[in-house]
Amino acid sequence: MLWTAWIACGLPLAAAPWNIIPKPESAEPAAGTFELNRQTPWFADSREASGVASVAVRILEPAMGGRMPVRSGKPRAGDPPSVWLSTKTADPSLGEEGYELVVEPRGVSIRAPRPAGLFYGVQTLRQMLPPEAFGDRPVAEGFLVRCGRVVDRPRFRWRGYLLDVGRHFRTVEYVKRTIDRLASLKMNVLHWHLTEDQGWRLEIRRYPKLTEIGAWRDQGGLRYGGFYTQREVREVVRYAAERHVTVVPEIEMPGHCVAALAAYPELSCTGGPFQVANRWGVFEDVYCAGNDGTLEFLKGVLDEVLGLFPSTFIHIGGDEVPKTRWRACAKCQERMRREGLRDEHELQSWFIRQIDRYLASKGRRLVGWDEILEGGLAEGATVQSWRGMGGAIQAAKAGHDVIASPTSHCYLDYPFSAISLEKAYSFEPVPAELTPDEARHILGLEGNMWGERTPEEEDVDRQTFPRLVALAEVGWTKKEARDWSDFQRRLSAHRRRMELQGIALASASGVRLGDWTPETVSETPRDASWPVPRRHVPAGGDLVVEFQYESGLHGLEVTGVWLEVGGRTVAEDRHVGFAGASNRANRYALRLPRELPQGTVVLRATIRSDGGTDSHGAVWLLPSRPAKQR
Image 1 (cartoon, helix red, strand yellow):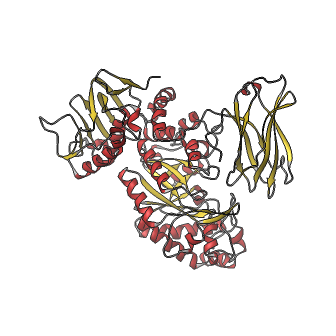
Image 2 (cartoon, rainbow, N blue to C red):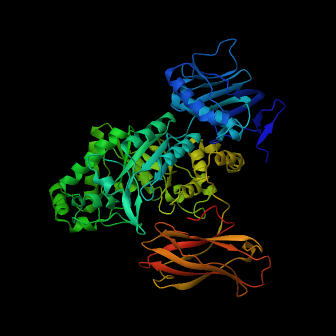
Image 3 (cartoon, one colour):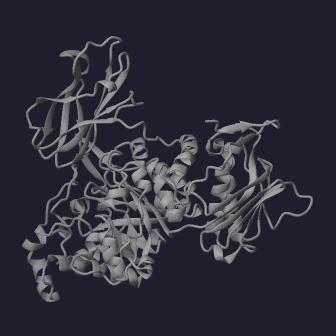
C-alpha cells in the first residue's frame, strides 16, 4: 500500500481516503488541499482555545521541524493560510467532546463548545496528514491536507485504559508516552493502578515506610521496584490534563495490600511480619476491618491522594478479598457483632461504605471492581464490571454507574489467542438486558493491561496494541457505524503512525504448541515434548520458542530446548530461562539447517517447576528471532 504521495510541489499528501481512527460520525471529502507548514499560524478565539493550540503546535513540532506560531483572535483578510480554533462559534449540540473540522485551501477551522472537543479535532487533523506527522523528525517543509468536513462526537464519556505499575514499575517517561497514545486515539481516562501486593508505587508523606519498604521486593536476590514522588505524580497529572486525559488513581483496599502490610504490619489481622510479595496470586492477608487504625490510615492515604489527583473518581479496588483472616480475627468478629453484620461479605460492604462516605464528603466518587456488589453496594459507588457483564447489569438496574471491562473482551494481558483483535472490536458495552434508562448508567469501557507477564515496556506495548485501537473505536463510534472490514482497512494505515510513535506492535501471531499444568510438571527436572506442525518449520529459517507463564503460585525453569525432526536433533538452545513472576530469558532461538530430514517434528525441553507445582502456562512458536530476550 502507498502510504504517502509526493506531489508536484514536493510536499507529502496522505493517501486517499482518510483513515481516521476512531471512525468519525461523518466525514465528507471535498476538492482541493491545504498546506500546513512550520510558518502556518494558529489562531484561537478564547483562553481555552489558546491552550489547545499551544499543545497542538508542541505535539506537531518534531514532525514540522519547528513550532508554529499561536495568535489570539480570528484570521483576517490578508493573513496567510492558517488554522483557527474556536469555542465561541461552535454548535452547542456537539457537547463536551464533539467538534466540527473544516479544511479549505485558505485555512482550517475547528469549532467545539469545549476545549476537549477542540483537542480531538486537532487529533483528527493530525490523522488527515501523512503518517510522518506522527514521527519525531521532519521529512519535508510541510504537509498537504485534503479538503473536507468532519463532524464528530463520542458515544461514551469513559474511554479508558488501565496501566498496572504495581507488578512491574514503569518510568514516568513511559507513562507520559502512554498518555500521548491514549490522546491520539481520543481516549480520555488513564486508570493508574498504583498499589499491589508486589509493590506500593506512590509517595505518601504521612506514611514514609510505604515507599521505603513497600515499593521494593526481593526478585531473584535483587532489590526490585520503584515509586513515584509526589512531584512526579503532579507532573504526570498536569501532562495528562493538557491532553484531556483524566488520571484516575487506584489504591487497593481491603485486599491486594501485602506491600502496605510489609511496611505497617499492625494494619493486618495477625500483626505479621510480612514481606512484599515476589510472586503472583491472591493473598489471604488483607487490611483488618475491625481495627479503627486501618480506616484512619486509609483516610490519611486518601487525603494525600486527593491532593494529587483532581479526578472526580477514585478507584479503591475491592476485588479478590479472601475472608480467611477476618473469620479468625477477634476484632473483625467484634465489628460484625457491633454493626449487626451477618457475614464477612457484609463486613467488606461495611468497609467499602466507610470509604465511600469519606470520599463523598470530599466531593469525590468511589469506583470499585464488581466484588463490591457482594454484601450490598455502597450508596454512591460506581462498579467496574470485570467478571463478565453480570455485574454491569446488576449495578445498572440498581441505578449505579458502570464501567464495562469484562475479561472476555477487554483484558489486554490475555494472549491474542484468547482475545483476538476482531473479538476486541466486537465488544458491545451496553448489555441487551438493560432498558434505555438503565443503559444510561453505562459510562463506557476500559481496556485493562495487567502487568504480571510483561516485565518490559515493549512487552506492554505488544500486548496493548493494536487491540487498544479497536477498543478506542468501540468507545467512540456509534454501534451501527462500526464495520470490521472498514476498520481493518483504516488500521492498515494507522499501523505506520503507531510505528512512528515508537510503539512496539504485536508481531504476526505465533503458534501455541501446548501447555504445562500442575499435572505435567514436577520440582525435579524432566523432559517434556510438544508436536510441531511441519508447515511451521522452514528449512534454513529461524524459529523462536517462548514459554509464557499464565497463572499459579510457581514459575517454570527451562534448562534447554531442542528441535527433533525424524528423531534427529536439528537445532538447540541450551541456556537456562525462567517463566513466572518475572521472566528471565524465556525465549529460545533455533536456527534451522538448510536441509531437514523427513519425519515428525517434535519440540523438546528440560523443565522443572520452581518451589511447587502450581504453575500454568503455554509454549509458543514464534516466526522469527525477537529484538532482545526478556
